[in-house]
Amino acid sequence: MSAASQPTFSCKMHDHQCCITAALENAEQLCLQQSKRFTNIRRRVLELVWQQHKPIGAYEVLELLQRDKRTAPPTVYRALDFLQQMGLVHRIASLNAYVGCAHPGEPHDGQFLICESCHSLAELDIPEISNAINRSAADSGFTTRRQTVEIMGLCPDCRHPG
Amino acid sequence: MSAASQPTFSCKMHDHQCCITAALENAEQLCLQQSKRFTNIRRRVLELVWQQHKPIGAYEVLELLQRDKRTAPPTVYRALDFLQQMGLVHRIASLNAYVGCAHPGEPHDGQFLICESCHSLAELDIPEISNAINRSAADSGFTTRRQTVEIMGLCPDCRHPG
DNA sequence: TTTTGAAATGTTATAATGTAACATTGTCAG
DNA sequence: CTGACAATGTTACATTATAACATTTCAAAA
Ligand SMILES: [Zn+2]
Ligand SMILES: [Zn+2]
Ligand SMILES: [Zn+2]
Ligand SMILES: [Zn+2]
Image 1 (cartoon, chains in turn yellow, red, green, cyan):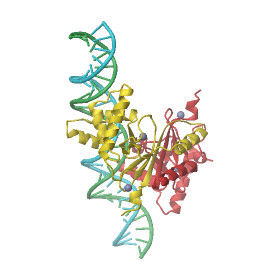
Image 2: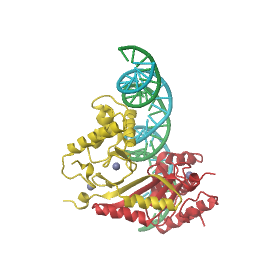
Image 3: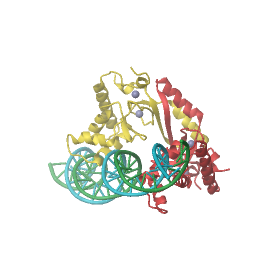
Image 4: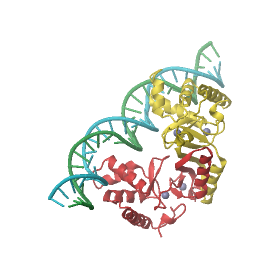
């Protein structure tokens, strides 16, 4: 099974090509189900986003696309916006970067562990957190539509080096 | 007492000049205690950030400063960085904007309720949330250094209009 | 099959946000 | 005073993101 089902850091040794393939097939199915077009550009951008277990910037994606064909920023941003709306990638606000969603399928916000040392990222989806947030917001009379939870620190590997 | 002690939305009718004055005096004390210089620029930027109960962009601050005196971006960013380090303002990553800290004194991350309709913002500081986050991170072997929690939705006023 | 209209992409230019690097000025302890 | 460091000034540039309009692609309707 691909890393898409791993709850936390998946940067240990694994066949990452498997992650990518699984993510792409998954995406294809999702788009089919929802009658959305999984075009070449969108597929390629998703592939590039998945090529590392780290967030990637839009202009990094752009640069990689350029190797095949002249491309301009709007193309990348459009694809990323589409993938976000489909719940296939997340934007990490504190990094201005994008990462493949570990649990695509239904829309969700997720929580992100971001290692300040190796820059790896892991997606969590802990109801306890989102519920605590929703509850506190509701206590203030606030209606939550979306939540951003980004946690900066040290991943297990960087915490215990060597 | 100023709105600085209010736990949630303080955009209702109140003497906001009072908020500003209190925030400035508070800041002055803090800087004094920590032997940091609360210079004119820093004071002025903090004042401008406090002039609304909404996040303000760095370039908006810049524009307001320009009315007095020619100023360049680094000046504003330096002041904002200083104020952040002193725990006097927070940067809202999802908005690229800054807001006065409602509970200055000791460093903390805070949680932010952001109204997508009127763009007002309220700062929370709910241990239940930050603890849930720290606990989940620890369960993944992750050491938390800093957390970003930004909650987008509708404030009480915009939820029940009229 | 052809038409045709909406969605997707291409293209150009520019807006918005943030920083590097070095010069100058201000502050204060010795 | 003076030396040293912190703060600010100044110029230039890097990075991130979008507006506006042209062109292409694709699939459904005629
Ligand atoms: Zn996800
Ligand atoms: Zn790490
Ligand atoms: Zn605060
Ligand atoms: Zn509102």
